[in-house]
Length: 305
Ligand SMILES: [Zn+2]
Image 1 (tube, protein in one colour):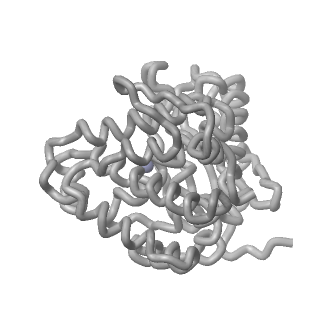
Image 2 (tube, rainbow, N blue to C red; image 1 turned 60 degrees about the vertical axis):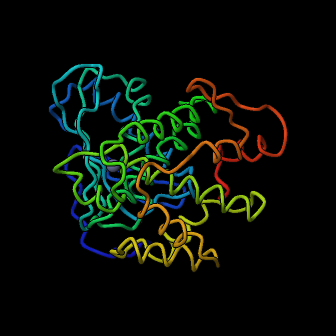
């Protein structure tokens, strides 16, 4: 039997509980304001989303967590106009969803994967937005490919497009990432901040895989971070210290120094080249054979399962 680590409210009448293979619990609360048929579509989507999060290290990040879904009006071009992660007594992800959206439409929206990927870090959100948004922006793409809604090529194209958006957001080039991040809510520069962060985790992932000949990746590093620290509120500096300690190197701090002092989007073409990905006119082209291509394909499944 599970011992509750904190207070647990009785699920309300319309909430259902999902379990992962380790019997961790996800309370899903889909608003009764949705028509019944929409609720069925949304619950299919939530099951799919929750499954995608197990494709990092096999189980959900916490013993108990929750997803709430509320209806919102808007255009079907943007079926999830708003979503937010609340790090409260239990981690709770709130989605605001169009009631006309089908499960299939929702499964093809990146927003869901992005929000659940935030839970991979024991971070409670003060400063250093680039770090948490970077991890979510990077992993949202891995999750989509692993769960089968993006092909390998589409995944790399999405990552490339993200880095290109980061580079194109050049209004604050010359200022460090740290200072752009600090002024982001007033002045903008979101793409530079988010995708410099994604660059950090992409570069770290490549480095871990290279040093271990493919045996160890960000998946394993996140798994270890989860097993030591999931219930803690850690600063970014503390998380990085844990990541370095668990991998017995200083790569995470070295990359941290490099990225937070960067004065423009860090270069990414060489990272893609290491994985047998050529860029022609903004389009990725995947080299079919060789060691780089083999390494690239290893991103499509977890190394921590
Ligand atoms: Zn986010």
